[in-house]
Image (tube, rainbow, N blue to C red; front, top):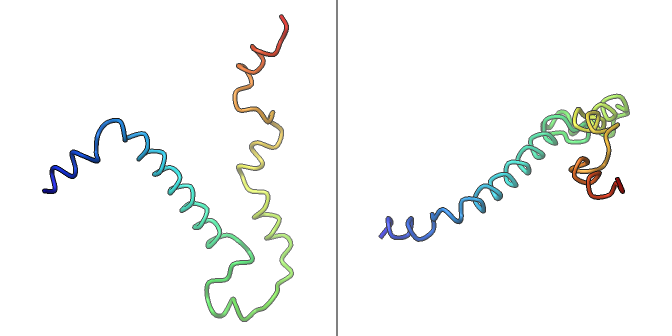
Length: 91
């Protein structure tokens, strides 16, 4: 019974769907781990939770201005600028 179910659901045409869902789950997991480990407002241990509201602006700025945001800060907000330029330039 199991090989028939595997052959029914694991066909080559569903591999891209599995890949897309896997990438989405990976992105969600990465963001959850990033929030738990580096977010200054998330406190996991009981000792840190009893501290109350902290005035840690430097840590918050470091969290908000992460490496990906710094990388794309001065870039054009286009996904494929060469293709866009090809179709929009009148030359």
